[in-house]
Length: 337
Image 1 (tube, one colour):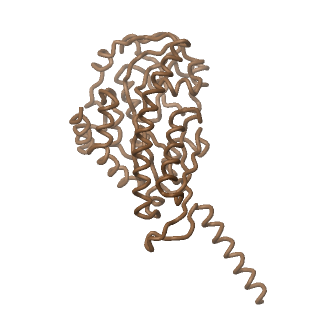
Image 2 (tube, rainbow, N blue to C red):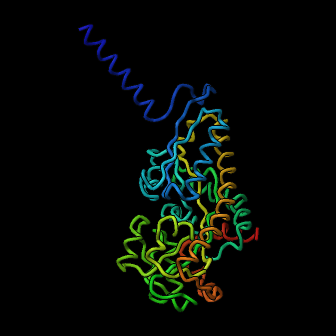
Image 3 (cartoon, rainbow, N blue to C red):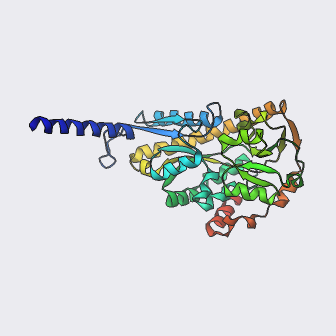
């Protein structure tokens, strides 16, 4: 009987050690002020060659440096831990530690976030940075935390997006009429292209190449870097320069994970996100120029009449603009132009 009891104790001890290892937490507690050794997993959707991956690795490097190794971040690219929407769901439930979540994916859970990806909302990267680092970005982060239990550690800017088509160039908004164009699974993108007269079709990023190749859609919109890194230029023929949206992304962490960190570690992660965000912005600018040049040798480049696009956009037509907080956010963004 004693031997059996000892066996149970050993088994329970092993299970406890295994549980601590799986969750990435070692000794120490926030209450006692002792440092924890924490290993966080961070997911993103893009290929290892993409600037998002390079920026994620920079964030991991900064976290290790700032925390003295008490917190480390392991980065998983190429949707190996799930799609962006699945990652956001996992952050909400605490089954994933961290992820790079584009602001465009938040409106499915936080409608107000749609304001940050409205078309022609930003005049420049500098304008966007002022908005993200200022009152607008802080207010959105508070709303996201309250509604989802996900904490935005920081933002960074991605390149202005362009329209890519397979069969015909797009010179004006009128040329988009009826075009089945792949958009992210975001109501803001769907509404934008409805206003422009197209037939927006949400398709998962991993299925977009085949959708273009088989004619399920006749175009897509995204950044030049994303198009090139995913080889989409192989199945489109025109890059139509629209600069219609610049959609920022986020370093997001499950608040249940964040609250287990010491106050010092929390501050260090926020600092790392801010610095990585600036690193990402400079990389965004550099890579946008580089990949536009690469695509020039592969595709026909079309200078669009952007005024015709802007004139088709009526912000009051976006459902999000009925919300008072959305109106405040839009005003805050415009106030730092």
